[in-house]
Image 1: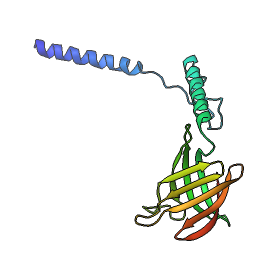
Image 2 (image 1 turned 120 degrees about the vertical axis):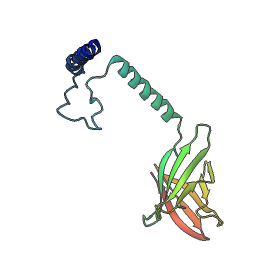
Image 3 (image 1 turned 180 degrees about the horizontal axis):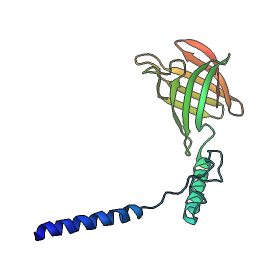
Image 4 (image 1 turned 90 degrees about the vertical axis):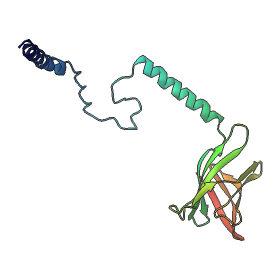
Length: 172
């Protein structure tokens, strides 16, 4: 009898305490009436930044600025186009602080092909221009590109592929 009474009392206490636990849950903040878009750099979705968040944001921006200053002029994405504007290759180049350049290529004519991308085997840069070579297909010769600066963010020259000389332009 005592066990039954204890079980009943404990069950009753648990049932009485349950609504208190459910009520103790934090109330979610009301959503912002106007959603924040990516171009609204001064506005945050959760309200104003705390001092710690502002300090973190400043440090992040400063670090990005330092890294950006260390990068060379070839850093970033480039496209190689034929003389009539047809896209041939996309390049992602990393212009290293100590003067070297490395990167990867992607064939824009066969984007979903398994062999349609890879690493650039050699990149040479000097005061006269830029020379890159990479292998599109195993067992075949290298594709060679020789370029000279032809304006801001633009290089012009030739691509040699299967003994064909193709006039090209490389742009951002």
